[in-house]
Length: 221
Image (tube, rainbow, N blue to C red; front, side, top):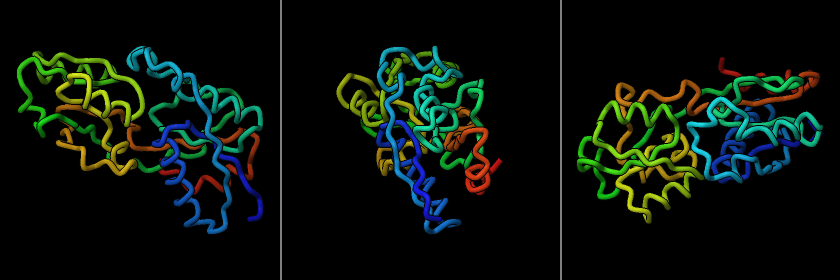
């Protein structure tokens, strides 16, 4: 397999880890699979102000990568599966949804307190509407604070901006080697995560049958 493919992804440390994970799996099937990683800054990486709850289901984090794929600048793309827009762009094909790892949400808190141990009126950082709604249902006294940014940026916000805790995806912390920051894996009966949390999506151009055939080994649907 002499061809060297270009794989597009966001530029965050987490996104690069997700591509690395994908390539490790691919090389179990094709030991000599070669790929050059192309980091692409998306609109969602630049806009750190718009709440996640306002852009869920859109191409906020995928638009520029998918356009690069359509333009032939990359050969395939790797996204967090939960970032996929409701409508996949014409000309692209989701060749694989990988097996989800660590699908729970996780609590990171100051003073190593679990969710039920946080003070009354605690300030808890969260991003998605799903998390915010379920947190308020669990404890109405929580002050839910919208947070944006990479996992590292969210941890920095917790450490420096007066929050008591934040909720993030366990899979993100695990992929970044930050499981030591997890105080509690939150039970599904408290926070039910996005069904695609922890899974990755691999996209190719609709007309690229060769890559469709190669990459379908990643599909766990």
